[in-house]
Every structure is written in structure tokens, then in C-alpha cells.
Image (cartoon, rainbow, N blue to C red; front, side, top):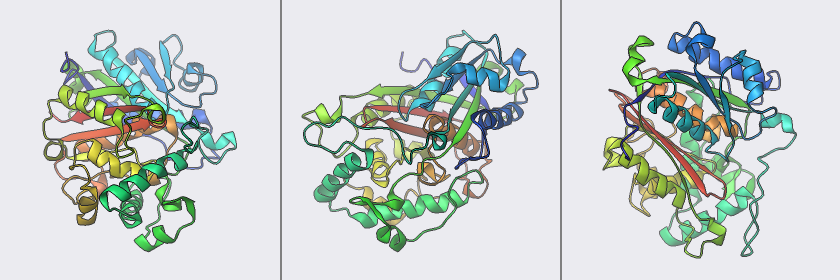
Length: 384
């Protein structure tokens, strides 16, 4: 049962609009930009005939699925909308992949989008439950985990700063990223404090954006293009609310651990560090990326700082992570992020990632957490 999805579904086209403060682009503009790039990538010339269904993800939808139908003029088609924290895009991808694997549809469109900048707030409208005397904002809550990790394993702000430096560099290599500014460790350490130990450069950039993927049955994928990418695994896991979990130790995310175990079983992966070639992980804060290295089994618990220092997760390292800059610099339009990661991993697996290309990448993972966090979505893609 755990292997039932493997190699049954293929990604045959991807697209992404420019992420950023897109004041001059409407939501419909961004959706059209991403989807029509995916159409061209897949060689789709008659979408109303070739696309059987649409699976959308948005945390701040305005008119639900109808705004996607209006933007793309895909009327009379089944269009579904997913909205569930930051793993929304991965979940929309999961629904699309499962519908194709089940034989319900031949070819589907997945599109994630959000335009939070038009909402008039500077950050996500998430106010975590205030229990046990804990902070109720994302930066405040995640910073508690950083303090505990520092105390337990001897890490410090310099380790987080190196992650920020890496992702800022990678963002300069991605044409559609929001931020294109190299920084130094000193820049990160001296930046305005947000919630200790997080300075400005430890926090992801919220942005507007949209990304899209075309999925079809693996058996017919080569009718679209010669180098389709296969879905090896896609899963969602939900954990106990950490603020109500007496066993939560502030040193790792249970939803990531649960989802990783399930995804590796689906994909047949036993040694993720050796078998994966590239990863896109949810770096809402630099500490989140650090913990994710360990939660995904990419390095032993407490050893992330040594790998950060040695460059393991840099482009050119043993296992590059967040090759396009991640949420930190590519941007984080919440509903689009999971699909943007699919976009990047597909380019990597097809050798189309330009100066950020990981040589001979054959297996790629994407990871999103959501909420305090209580949820996680993971997708694993691979070449034949």
C-alpha cells in the first residue's frame, strides 16, 4: 500500500511567475503567468480539451476555485481548492497526483497562489494559541526552539547566519526570486532583531506569487515531453499540537518526522542523505531549516552545525538544500510555496536549473511544515 503511488504519475510541465511585491500584477495575472508557462513546458495547446481537472492551493483565496476558472477560462471543469497552512501547495499536488494514479483523470493542472501583500499586513495572519505561557506569534514561538537547541547542542546565532548567507546566495541565482542580495555572516548577526535569536535575515520574505505543474499518467508522459519527472512519493502528516503536547522537546518537528517516514517508505528510500540529490525545505526561519536537516534524517540529531560549517548543504556540497534561495529569498506566497518547490526540483532533475544546477540530480525532495507546526507535506520526485 505504501508504494502504490510510486512511478504512476509524472510531472510533464512546470511554471512559476516572478515572486515579490507584485503591486502591478493581479492574482489572475500571476496565475496566468505560471499556468501558461506550464502549458508551454508540457506542450499543451488546447487546455480545455487536454486538462481534465484542476487542483488549487491558496491560504488567502478571494473567490475560491472560481477565480482560477475565470483567470484560465477553464469552465465546466472540476476545480478544487485546498487551504491548510504552509503545506497547502504540497497538498494540492498530492490530490492531483492521487487523482491521476487512481485513474480518475488522465491529465490535471496543479496551481498554488497567494497575494498577501494586497491584504495590507506585513506578515501572515497567524496567531498561535497562547497556552503554557508561550508566545503567540510565529517568530516568538520558533525562537523558543532555537534557544533550546542552542542550550542542548552548543549551536549559536553564527550557525543560523550561515544558513541565511547560503540562501541569499542561492536566491541571486534564481531569475524569479524576490530577493537578490548577497549577505555576510556579519550582516546577519548585526541585523535588526525580530525575536531573539532571530534577526531580520533569519526570517523568510513573505511575497506574492503563483506556481503550477502539469501531472499525467506515467505511461503516457512521453507524449508530452522526452524527460518527464516521476512522482516517487507524496504525503501529508499531522501531529499533536506542540503547545499541548507534554512530550514536545522543542528540538524537532514531529510532523516532519512522521511525514518523512511515510514518504521514504513510498519512495523506497533507506538512506536519505546518500540517496537524495537535492532538497527544498521549509525555511520560514533559519532555525526551521536547521531542525529539518535532522528531522529528515539528513544528519544525526545535534550534528547540523558541523554540516553547516563544512558546506554540506550548499550548492556544490554533498546534498544541496534550497537551491533557489528557499522561502528566505525566493519568497513565501503561502499557497504557492509547495508548488514552487516542485517547480525547482523538476528543473533540477531535468538539468534546467542554470547556474544553480546540481550535477546529475536524480532524486529530489520538497518539504513544507504548517502551523505551530502541526502539519507537514513532503513530495519526492525522480528521474527514470
